[in-house]
Every structure is written in structure tokens, then in C-alpha cells.
Amino acid sequence: MVETENTTEVLEVASIAGHILLENGAEISRVEDTMERIASHYGVDSGHFFVLSNGIFTTGSLGRYANVEFIPIRGIQLSKVVEVNKLSYEIAAGKHTLSQTRERLEAIRTAPPKPAWEQILGSAFGAAGFCAVFGGGFMDCAADFVIGALLYVFCLFVSGSLSKIVGGICNALVATVLCLVSFRLGFGESLSNIIIGAVMPLIPGVPFVNGVRDLANSDYIAGLTRLTDAMLGFICIALGVSISFVADGWLFGGMIKLSGMTVNPQTAGILWQCLAAFIGTFAFAILFGAPRKQYFSAGAIGAIGWVIYLMLTRFCHFGPTVSIIAATTVICILSRFTAVKDRCPSTVYLLCGIFPLVPGAGIFWFTYYLVSSQFFLSASAGFTAVKAAIAIVLGIIIAMELPQRVFSGRK
Image (cartoon, rainbow, N blue to C red; front, side, top):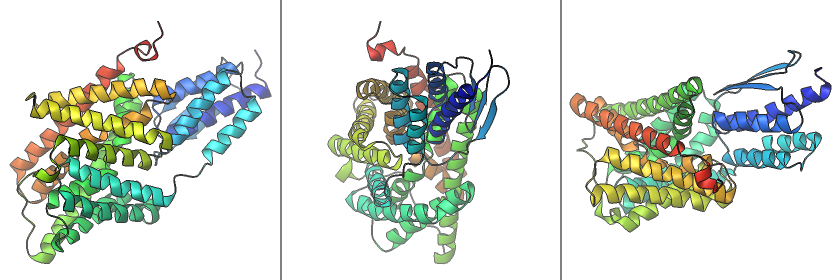
């Protein structure tokens, strides 16, 4: 077989699709399947694709075409993942010529992100919602609403021009400083809950979840790379929070004393918790650039998962680890069912819905106890956070083992 110009163009178009998917939060298996689907439809079954977490290698059958793309890990727009996924199935149905496909892909690639005001509101509502989820009262949530908005203004217009590590540390530093200022001015009652809510928009949930999914698909290189990226994000948050507390203690002659996690009865009820989880997850769908018509479903899945966790811990007296495994499994299953119903990648719902279970509180308490030299409590909080993370991993793996025909209804 002789490789023609058409073959080269097909492989280029498939690579463009893979590039868009990879840089916007799609898992490796979806990137590979989409590229193969496009190439196969246009008669280039001999195309070979090798995808890593930050790169795509494309070669032709006779070695006359080769392309290597480096794709840095960056912010995501799930709406682009949805659009490319939809386009690939339209291609398989014969609805687009090769030139039309290239034009559509270029339009998707250059599509602008969500407006700044929408992202800022998403951060504000996300911080306030998760403040309530982790025990904050109404005043704490109000403080976090303001802090979340100010934080994302900083993220959009300042830290975006910094390196990933420096930007991550600065984001957490600004969030914690704003929380400390708010608390010292009397705006908010529980400093710990305010900080936990404020840093939630910074949690690297996308690389964490996708890393787990890649490992579940036996893609160990990509999985470990993405989990390393997630770990780096957690470390940046810890450093930013630590620097803020040390500076505050130096300025005011001593570090603020915190006595462990507190739950405000104002928001402790199941209905309030359900609403808070819905708002927080809904807001994160905005931050992740999900299509607007998917906001409600993402919020509902997150709320259902969190209520299941609360029911198991409060009324069935299960431990947190078992409850997180069960809730994560339900979230994954609901995500897959909803994906089939909406003809949308399950990634959209899973990435957002899993956030109420992410151990943001454990990360904060590990950092605070470490900075305040309470090493035993720090180790205990860190171990609790690790157990929660492992429980999420197990829940995702369990749900992903179920065959797709269970969700699609095909035999």
C-alpha cells in the first residue's frame, strides 16, 4: 500500500481531534478510540496512534508519515471534549467529508472559553457550596462566596501568566490570606471551614480522576503521570496554606489556634447538605467548562453521591472509607447511565460529581497541624486523606469494570 496525500491528511485530522481531547481533560482511552474511529472511517485503517498524558505519536503504515505532538497539561474545557466526541460519531455515520471535519475541528479548537464573569461566579458558588458541605455555617458560606470570586479573578488575570508550580502556590496563598483577613475582620465564624471551602476550586480533581481511570485501563505511564500532576497540585496547595499561616503568626505574634473540624448545625441537615453539594458540583461544572445543558445533571449526581455518603455514615454507622467507596461507585454508575442518555462522555459527570468526596478537609488539617508542629495530628489527618483518596480510587475501578452494555442496554 502506498501512502497518499489523502492518507496524510486523514492522520493529521485524527491527530487534531486527539490533541483537542487530550488538552481538555479526556481520558487516554477516549483519545485513542476517537482517533482510530476517524481514521478508520476515512479508509486509513493502517494509522497507528500512541497517546501519552501529554503527547501524541502518529505514524503511517509505511513509515512515510510521522508526527509527534507535545501537549502540556493545562486548564480544561469539557465542552470541547463533548463536541469532538459528538463529531466523531457523526463522522462514523458518514455525515462529514474530510475537509468538513477539519473545519469543524478547527472551529472547536479555537472556540473561546466560558466568559470570565461566569467562571468567577462558578468559583464563588463552588467555594460557598463546599464550605457548607464541610461544616460551614451561613456566614462562613457568605465569606467564601466573596473569597471564591476574588480568588478566581486572581487566577484569571495574574496566576495564569505564572509557571504551574508558582501559580499553584500563589493561588493557595491568596485564598488563605483572604480567609485570614476575613476571619480577623469578623466576617465568618469558622476559619478552618472557610479555608477548606476557598481552596476547593484549586483541588486538582481532573488529573486525579483521569489518572485513576488510566490506571484502571492498564495505561500505567499515563496514569502515573497524571497522578503525579495531581500530587503536585496538592503540594502547591499545602505550601500556599503553610506560608500564609506562618506569615500571619509572625505578623500577629502567634498562630491562630484551631481545634479540629467543626460542623455548624445551620447547614448540617440532610436537605441543606444535599443543596450545598448540588450547588458546589453545579459550580464546578462551570469551572470545568462543561456544556451548560449538562450543569444540572452534574450537580444532581454530585448531590446524590454526597447524600449516600452521609446516609451511610450517619444512619448505617459505616466507616468513612467504606462509605466513600460506595458513594464513588454510585457516582460512577450514574455518570455512565447519564452519559448514554445524554449522548455525552461520562467524564463530564464523573469529574464534577466526585468533588464532594475529595478529601479537601484532610489536606487542610494535615497542613495546619504540620505548620503548628502538631506532628501526630498531622500524620493522622494525612493518613485519613490518603485513605479517602484510595477509597475513591477503588470506587472508580469497581464501577469502570462493569461492561458498557449494562448502561447502553445492548446485548
